[in-house]
Image 1 (cartoon, rainbow, N blue to C red):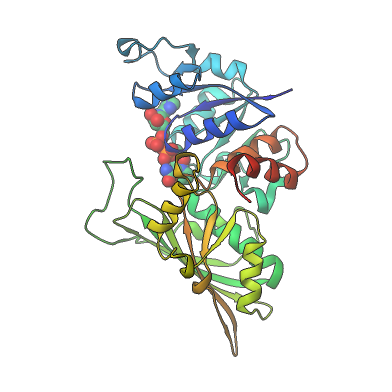
Image 2 (image 1 turned 45 degrees about the vertical axis):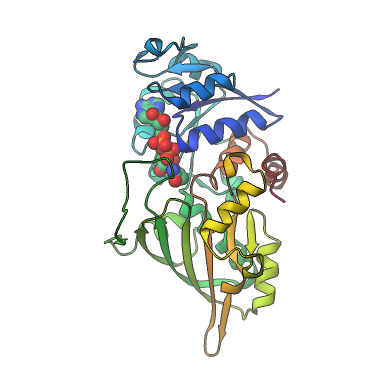
Length: 338
Ligand code: NAD
């Protein structure tokens, strides 16, 4: 029987998860919440998604939308809720709705690890989410770090990692955030990303710094790793090519920037022009082998989409589907990920 999924918080992440759920053969989208009326509500209606209100009907009826019920009705029909509300709202929803109504719930990276006690990246720790009631999908940056670090750790062993996150200032549709003419460092050491990686890759020693730049397309990470075993560049390229949800991109393809990578996603006909794979530049992979075994690389993260397949695999794990590799394969097929 199909897993019934309810979507609370229909924004950047929520609308993508809703579409992804609707594409899975073993899942059924019960519906989505409309916190207030917007073009998102109109598109949800066009797609035939049921619409459930939160905190009253607001301006929905004024704009001709007749809701199918409220958030309580959505929860009653669902086996699992994916909460993709802004940070801290997930915690409020947990206490107000999910716990009292005893429904399983997935939270996003804006919430703290403690909300669920389990943080998730499918190819790293699928088994930890099996049969759990609450799980948190880590942020887009942490997902990107975890995917490549996990592959490197399994092959070479990691002594320690230093990484800098060059973050997009805002999502493409977002008129409220920035910067538009500055580079803004995160003035805390380490940035929260390092400790967040450890909620998934528990034994990795990692120190991160971060800054924001005037771009909306993707984040870019520079990563430096002290390895336990010596590596060479060709083997690292093969490692990333053979790891799921990682794409090796090349200068020779004229994929020299985040702009060209996003153009590639659009040209490939990806839904919304998304690129859920972590893109590692082949020519930006380097090795220093003298007294140390150091590996350096740069990777790009499409912040709006890399966590979407993670939500899908997490739903299966929480509903008791035991085979993580099979789940990843099923999900990848629906996203067109090779
Ligand atoms: P968003 O602002 O695009 O969407 C949030 C949606 O929730 C909006 O549609 C809003 O109307 C709705 N909402 C607000 N309060 C609500 C409530 N009480 N009940 C129901 N709906 C409510 O936010 P987003 O970027 O999709 O982020 C959602 C979560 O995903 C956050 O935890 C964020 O940290 C995380 N995340 C965001 C990104 C990103 O780059 N955008 C990437 C990875 C993870």
